[in-house]
Image (tube, rainbow, N blue to C red):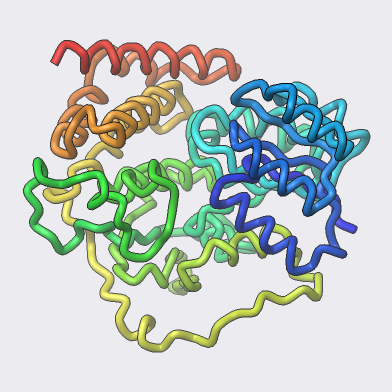
Length: 388
């Protein structure tokens, strides 16, 4: 049996992973699940999959819940420093689908306890890749990216000489406003959440509507695959069938397509190609292949793409400030404190402040340092917006 752990098991990625496990329960032993605060859901997951260890990182549970967990012989922990109490030796696979920069610490802490880690947390990779990679090398842990674009790149360059890569292209659907001439002031939260192809969490759906998710994915690809930003491009593919293109210096071009379904990258991160478990795939969608409608994104419409020019060539603390500014403004938009126009206006304005430029030359040396920059940036953004 494959021993696995799922961090963030109550979110959309975690639920997808559990559904894959559900189809072949006899193949798996889940040793750990975690959630931030969804106690009812993780309790039901633990019962269904006979999981004996869970982490609830967001809040303490009341006495009635403690009794229910105790009755079912489920151990409860409240932070990610308890991995050593759960794992006596390395497990086979871990999926980290915790959202936000908060996912960095558990990512780094669990690497030593797993043979393979699949990461669906772009914030961790963008802010702390040098720290993550150091642990991966030290503990000889295999890493697989789970974002559909980075999973696709990972598959396309497998066994290829990275020196032969001329260009990496990731695709973007263009989000809900690709072909609309909306008055930015009139865009409502429900409009920005209405992604045409993917059903995602609220935060990433808003990032998709502004194309900030593609800005982050370019930075993520730069770090994972150790390639210069000027070798990574974005193309619009409205039907989201094509996920990545690699152009090689030997004249060959590789492309990877799959349905808009996160089951596929997660399934492939769990099962090695040598294993006989097969995904129940659909036939080739000829209509989608014949109607890819690839085009370059309009930077006048999606001004966030110009922010890529601010990203330093080397790992730095600027990326933490960069992500935090966006996170805070998106949260304000979702809670209707600012409108969509102001979200874009303040995003571009604040990121360009000299205050944050100083971080461009400082390499992250610890999780604590990254979290300090996050907290300082968060306070600055909130204080600044209050004055407007």
